[in-house]
Image (cartoon, rainbow, N blue to C red; front, top):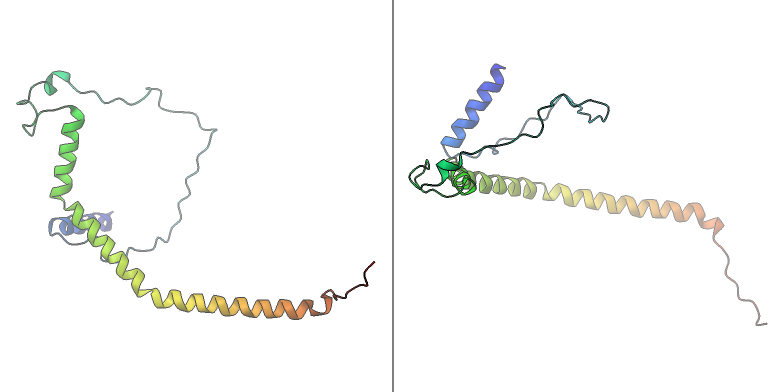
Length: 147
C-alpha cells in the first residue's frame, strides 16, 4: 500500500512539474487477474439506474455558476473539464507520450527488419524442404495425341 501511495505522489509531482509521466518504462505485471462475466450472478443492486440530478434553479442565472459564465450543466461541465485538463497539462502529456512512443518504435526498427529478414529466410527454407519432399510425387505432364 505504501509503494502505491509513493508512486501516486511521484505521478502527481510529474504532472505539476510538466514532466512526461510515460518517460519511464511501465513495469510488467507479474500477477494475473482474471475477471469473468457470469450470467449466473444475480444483480445485487436493486436501486435501479444511477441518476445524476442537477438543481435547475442554479443554472438559470449567469452569476450563480461557479466559473461565472453560466450556461447549461453540460456546458459548465465541459468548461470544468477543459480547465482541469489545461491545468494538468493534458496536451503536453499526450504529445510527450506520442514522442516517447515514436522514439521507442524507431529504436526497434533494426529489430523489426532483422526479424522480417529471418522470416523471409525461414519461409524460403520451408519452401525448399516442401519441394524436396514432394519432388517424387509431382505429376508428369505428357501430351496425348489428338482424338
